[in-house]
Length: 372
Image: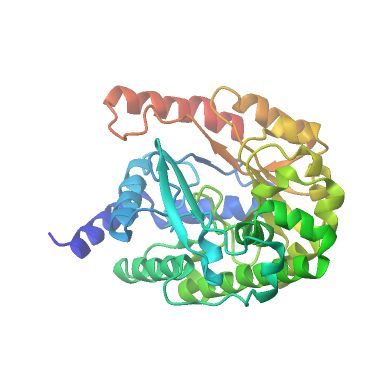
């Protein structure tokens, strides 16, 4: 059996496991969540990925097969996962639009996807040119991979936007955070130039993804396993928020983020680490409609001043604290997109019948009642 035949065979199995009525019901749950309408029958949720890698390091053929196999494994568990392809994440990828050299390092199993700093000194920004596709950049590889997936699957799989990071993180990859901080005070015009160019790069790439995937594009990358209707929101990573005070964030980041919100819609902002100092500001700011955290729990966001101004995608939700988290949602009248971790008996997918029976029991007796 050749590659295309193998892809078609697996897609046929996926269609049986995820029939159209199941997909449409999940989409309606997601739609109601994002529009703050009463739930259909339960809060939409997904179980975390089984073994799909987040990083953009595997060849496209291997990555597609990895995802198809993952979809088949997930098919027997009726969460609100919608089979869809995700080209990945490369933390230095967007800097390649400016000519920065990118690399991948495996540090004892911990992958570092990054780039060589293009602007070692603050004054080097004077010669920085606008971003452009150069024929060999990471974003162009992502676009090529997405186009290839759409072709070999005959348009049967939607694709997510990639996790490409937002303008301030892109600027920091080009410049270094020490230069970025100093320039914001000592060379404000250079700061504006670099971050404006980085904002243009983000918008340019979103537009290229829209052109590439059309109606098949899902404009979130929140673990690459949720869904949102087109035009409702867009997701953007901004890990640097952990370092910013509210005044710095408001003065030196929000003007550029507003440009993105004005171009598309209010958007979901993601950061790993602790950024409680910004939670209330984000909730109260109309440029944002969601907060996705890598480490902060729902309880921590509420304690930091979180309110119903955004939808929450909290970290750390699992079978053992799901009751606590759903209780917090109801107590504080909040909305959340729940990703439940630790559900799978193992991440190899090699499950015994005993494993499968236990997972189905947890699904039916713990998860569904708590989210209904």
